[in-house]
Length: 175
Image (cartoon, rainbow, N blue to C red; front, side, top):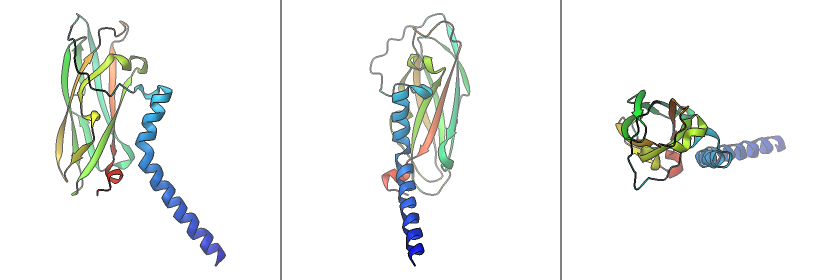
């Protein structure tokens, strides 16, 4: 009976640990990226005043998306690639589909490659600024408005903006 209790309590502890770890994964990931500067994390504060000052320079921006941990979503950029003028405001959208019949919550985490150029990618309006609530079987268009800073190094010709969408429903106590 002693082995049974030991196994039972080990399984309970492991279950609680795994639930806690999955609950803290998104905040821990954000802290890790902030501390190390890895993953090209872009500034997630809204830009209140933007000086649109286009220059005669164009760069390619590629958009990618992934869904973390088999979350029940389909998440894709509407535009896979845009050629944008540096210093000019641009608009695009991503789509998010909830593949279940219940309300879900999701949070997007952005990354820019090359990492050293992330600071020049300025988001004005972004679905990543807040958590998204999406009804069962619903598809939403999520807006993204951005500007490429004029200070972007001249040797940069392409930027890749990638979002990872996390299911945060359990963190809110919803299903």
